[in-house]
Structure formats: C-alpha cells, structure tokens
Length: 449
Ligand code: CMC
Image (cartoon, rainbow, N blue to C red; front, side, top):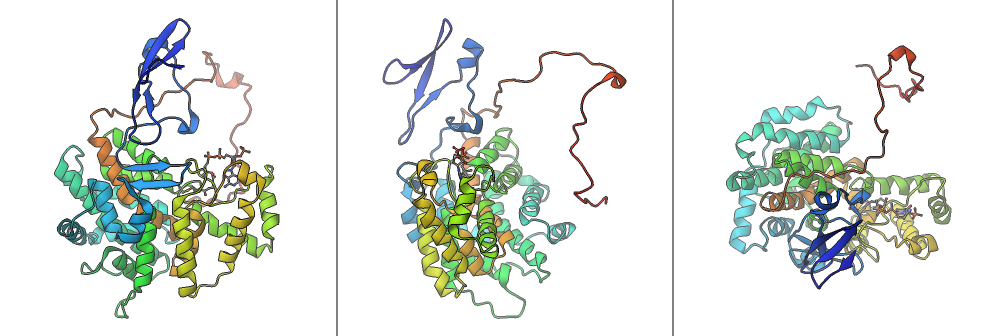
C-alpha cells in the first residue's frame, strides 16, 4: 500500500488499484477508509481482535498508549479525577462539556428523581440464586428495564434517549446495592434522593434500617474517583459491544446490558476480581513473588499476572498511577490489613524489572490496585466488576448516543475469511464414520432442575 499524497492511499490487489480516503484525527492515528475494498477487489481486510481497525470516528475519549495519556472530551484524566465529581464527569461524557452549576444541579436532580425501582422489579432480583454472580443479575436487570420504560426505547427520539440515559444512571446504583444486599440476606434500603449519588449508593449497599447513616466522606471521594477513572475508555471490548448492538438500533438498555456481559470477562472488567483471587492464592500457597512470576513466564501454565498488560497502554496506564496513590493514601486510613497490598507492590516491582514483562511492555493497569481499595471499603470481591460497570455507565451511554447520531454509521456487520470445508454432501446417519465430539462426562455435577 502506498501513500499517494498527503491524504489518500492506494492499495493494489492484482491489477486493481483502490484509493482509500484518509480520515484525519485531531490527535493520534489517522485512519484509511477501506470501505471500497470488497466491491473493487473481492477481498477483505483480516484483523482478529481489531488490533488495527477503527470502527468509528469519535469525539469522546482520547488515549495515547505510548505516552500514557487519557482524556475525556479533551480534559486530562488527572485533572478530572482531582477536581470533579463523578456526576460532573458523566455529564461531560454524555453532553460534551463540563456542566455549569445550574446544569449540574438539574442533572443531579433529574437522576435523584428516578432512583427508586418499581416494587415489582425489586422482586425480579429474588428470582436468581442469591449467590449468583452479580454481573449476570445486573445484565438481566438492565435489559429488563426496557419492559418498565417502554416510552423511552426509541433511540432516534432525543427526549426518549435523554430519559433512558437518566433512568440508567439513576437505577443502576440501586440495582447494584440490592444485588449486594440480597447476596448476604440483609434488608434493602430505599434510595434517599437528598444525598449525593455515590454517597447514597454506599449507604444503600452497607446501611441498615434505623441505624446511623453517616457515610465517611473519604470513602465517598475515593469511590467517586475510581468511578471517574473507569468512566470511559474509547473503543474497548464492552463499549464496542454496546456500539455493535446499538448499531442495530437496539434500545439503550439492551445495548448497555450487552456491554455488561462483555465487561464480566476476566480479560476485561473481571480482572479486578481476578487480581484479588491471584493475590490470595499467592499468599495461601505461601509462594514467593519470584516463584509466582516464574509461573507466569512459563507458557505451559497459562497463568497471567492479572492486572498487568493492556492492549493500548504500552508504557504506563495513567489510571493505574492515580489508583496506586489513592491506595497509598486510603488503605492505611481505612485500617485494612496490608498483607495483600504488600504482595501486590512486590509483584509490581518484580515484574517491572523482569525481562519478560519489559520486552512485552506489560505494566500495571487500572485493575491492579482497585480491588484492594474496594475490599478495604467493605465490598466483597464479586461486587468489584459491578462497580466497574457503574463507573463505565456514562461512557457506554455517551458512545451509544454518538453512534445513534452519527449519520455515517450503519449496522455493524463484520466480514470473515472462510476457512472451513468446501462443499460436501449429506450421507445417511448410519453410514457416518465421524468421531464422538461431545466433551461431556458426569464430573460437572450439574443439577437437572
Ligand atoms: N501476564 C503475563 N503475560 C501477559 C499478560 C499478563 N497479564 N498480558 C499479556 N501477556 C503476554 C502474552 O502472553 C503475550 O505473550 P507472547 O507474545 O509471548 O505470546 C504478550 O504478552 C501479548 O499479549 P496479548 O494477550 O496478545 O495482548 P492483548 O493486547 O491481546 O491483551 C490484555 C491485553 C489486557 C487482555 C492482556 O494483557 C491480559 O490478559 N492482561 C491480564 C488481564 C487484565 O488485567 N485485564 C484488564 C485490562 S485493563 C481494564 C479493562 O480495560 O478492562
């Protein structure tokens, strides 16, 4: 492929030249629009894992993996984390500008008006085993919102879309708090609309009826900061999922619920939970940090250092730096036992000076220390990924809205390079010599009900 002029590029397949229009970025990589390739040459591009493929243009979040930069709508994450509330950042992501005091107050008020869950909907949560993973319950709950708010489903109606955005921001904290409370058999608390968003979420998650409801402002601020750090991350796996589902004009609830499913994976949002499991396993097995690092490096084991590595950040993850200094500040003040924190710090130190990690440019990501803070706040490990989802909610909403309003967007429909059998013909069942391909024994012990 050659760059014919400052703008476009020409790609040659056999005798055919195809011109790709260059799409300029305000910062970061420009893109080439390859849409004419198939029609002109009969070939497609192949890019498993989308390592080199931009799915859209976007004005929301800028990341420089090499420089460790993360900006929402142009604002550096460090400034937002230091100075803003989570709701301010949510407004910024969704509407494009930081709110003035009046618009922020109106935004908060609209959200606070809708934090209650329908009483029937509350019962919905009891249909799941109380120990079922909160992400599975949350995903179903968010998808289920479409049945209660049918007048907010049309993504092309601006007012409906605004209302669906507000309803999601308002009800997801209540849902997560209910899932957490039900898992331990404690009474659910109604939302208190006089409180700030994150403060009330903490109260609903940990508070008990008729008992003191003082919420430590230090914990509120720390959680707000973590939510801000998770609020958007351009076209990551869950956001791309939200966009792909939304490209079919599925409603906002269905699209965000799909994002929750993607986020639950251990290579994505589930990593914060996996980090804590890993730290505990190291401690309980009495492994030294060097022994564990050797296991990670030995490819026979398929053990990963969870909370390390990132598709985009190849020098450092700016969110991880903020989380680490937050951990340094808050863990001693919350009086948490620091054994796991010490293991994490030693692991980081060992990995950062180890050739395996250096050569592959693997650094701590946002999830490496977040679990330790969540745990010190009192959240059980299963609630960590729902907290990530709560933080990512404004990003998903903003990205969905951008997609819906982008006139160049079409239904997402990737191509493939087919590598299966060429045509073959049916033979009667009795004559087939095929092997038994079902990999099931009775060892899984799955209940028949
Ligand atoms: N521990 C050990 N080796 C690793 C790790 C790790 N955490 N991450 C990557 N590698 C190795 C990998 O084995 C491969 O080695 P080789 O070239 O010898 O085969 C090389 O580094 C490249 O890895 P990759 O899997 O091709 O990289 P990727 O860009 O596809 O994956 C990642 C990125 C984040 C999924 C991966 O680094 C990983 O699995 N990390 C651990 C899980 C984790 O912490 N996820 C949270 C990501 S940040 C929050 C979020 O966005 O959700």
